[in-house]
Length: 194
Image 1 (tube, rainbow, N blue to C red):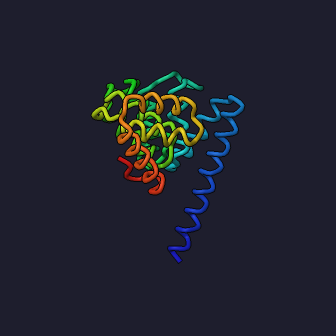
Image 2 (image 1 turned 135 degrees about the horizontal axis):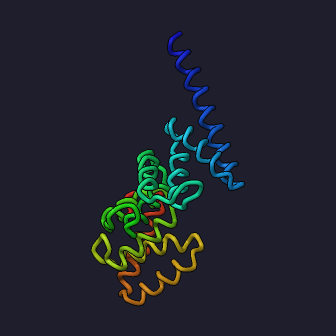
Image 3 (image 1 turned 120 degrees about the vertical axis):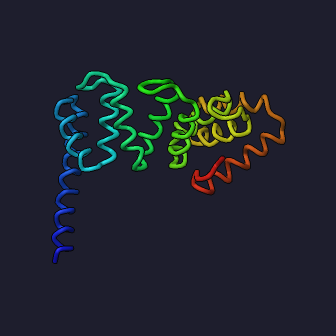
């Protein structure tokens, strides 16, 4: 009986945060930031990663709150710890640019890898940039080409351009290796790609 009561309570709690999240999305769509903030905070308090991500975004953009990159990072970390790919990507950007945290390319790459493993094309593109420039990783045109190629498949024109520019600095063997790595990465659903 106790298990049933706990299950019923959890069901109502889940419905409550889902309603708060839905109401938060509706409010942000109409730029009713005070309501969005309140609803996202309620859902975030229940551990909802999408609400935590949206609070991070509100603090990052200064929507209904004073822009605060440190608070944005705090909310993004909570969401990222639960596997939220958008939060992981945004943390990668913030560590790359030094917004709300000390600039740290190694940490940026770590967050990009987590998001890329979930199929986040922006994170995959940025990994291409990091490998091309040697930021946070050893410069590696083969890996840069692989990440650009993965993003190019989704129709990203800049990724196509960067891939082709990177290929101009590579041997035919390196290009073939990068293409093979991209195929293998796709077959593994972006897991353990480098």
